[in-house]
Image 1 (spheres, one colour):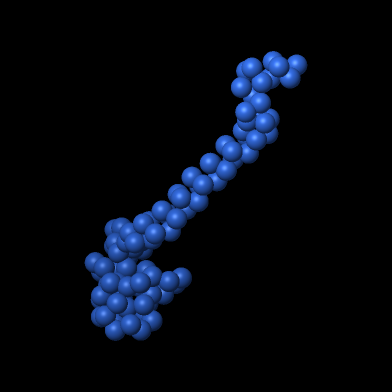
Image 2 (cartoon, rainbow, N blue to C red):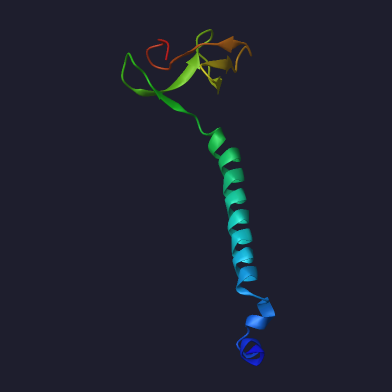
Length: 96
């Protein structure tokens, strides 16, 4: 039996458990790379919101200067003055 295993090349890998472990390791590395990509690249894309008043998909702007904002949960930070502000519609200037 041992000669059969060694002649078929399974002895070089040790056992099928090692092969499965290597496949799991490769899939985990691919998953980590995709998560890093999502965190770095997808985060930089602007987020569009549906405006309840005008019905358009719009970008959020600040209430104070109508400038672009760095979005947080339910509020944003104005990129012009750096203070916290409400998010308003880019077109109709009403709260989102």
